[in-house]
Amino acid sequence: MSKSKGKRFIVRLMNDAQYYVNIDVMRELNSLDNRLVRMLNSKDVDENNIREVIAGMRMLVKSKGRRVKDELIVTSDIIIPTVDISIEEVRKIFKGEGIIPEALLD
Amino acid sequence: MGLIKRMSSLVKQKVNKLLDKFEDPREVLDYSYQKQLEMLTKLRQNVAEVVAAKKRLEMQKAKLKDNIYRLEEQARSALEMGREDLARLALERKNMNIQQLLDVERQIEEMEKEQLRLEEMTKRLSVKVEQFKLQKEVIKAKYTAAEAEVKIKESIAGISEEMADVGYAMQRVEEKTERMKAKALALDELINTGVLTDYTTNKDMIEKELEDAMIKSAVEKELDRLKREVTSKNGKSKKVREGKEEKGEVKEEVLDQ
Image (cartoon, rainbow over all chains, first blue to last red; front, side, top):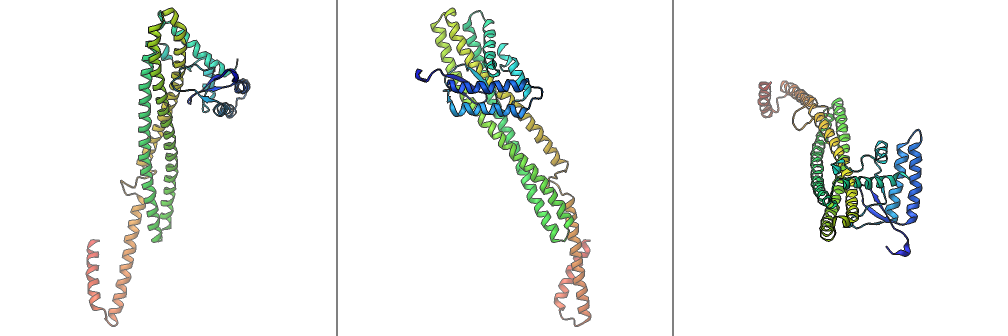
């Protein structure tokens, strides 16, 4: 919004909407994100823990963010998946498949 | 770079790939708009399917409720006749029906949520598609192909992200609806093959046994009455008129059997 508030970021919560957040929220999201990476790289991945982290991210954005107006068409700085996503899906998405329907590229 | 960041850079990568396919980037605008309209149509079809699935579940709910009511009634009349075994059987079935009912109610709730979500999404995408159409015309009128590229990239990336999200949501809902349909089919089959007998259409064992028991007890009662009559006739022969009427009844009963 105003420059005094610092840089704004746009976060998309998949299956929900886009939100503006400030740098503090971004930092928090980033540390949660790093936790996710560690979890996925560990030997025995616990799906529940992953869901919990994702839910935490979404809650953070929802409570501290402001919704982007529907008529605005903008890209997000980051995209946060849904909670009910499976590890397989998370892996697929983060490996670089699946997020954009292939039909779009035909 | 963390995981969530990779997701959005992925969108941008794919948009670049898309743009490379067209010589004039302005063509991408029309192409993308077409895809957006297709997506909106698909989204509306999705909503309709969810509504249909919900309706089917509601029909099953009504059926199960009816079963539960009937089984309760059957259990009561079984007890009245001292057939605790039959009452138990009826109550067991009643509870099975209740379990199914709870499950169906949960599913209805879930479908309701999906419906709302999809409707919300449809609304948002419609607004965005309308907006994109305006932007598209402005870009086409104002810029040359070379100038337009950055603008186009921006709006295409934005709308692509939206469509990716919508596409993903639709895919999930489709899976869910499919699962629900399969479940509903299984439940229908369960009802039809008598595991959860559909008491609305045919008599089942409990009902038949109850009927048999009723006839039996009626016969016993008649027998008792006759015995009493016979002994009283041998005695004072007081209730002659009443006795006559009852004799007529007994005759009919005998003929029936």
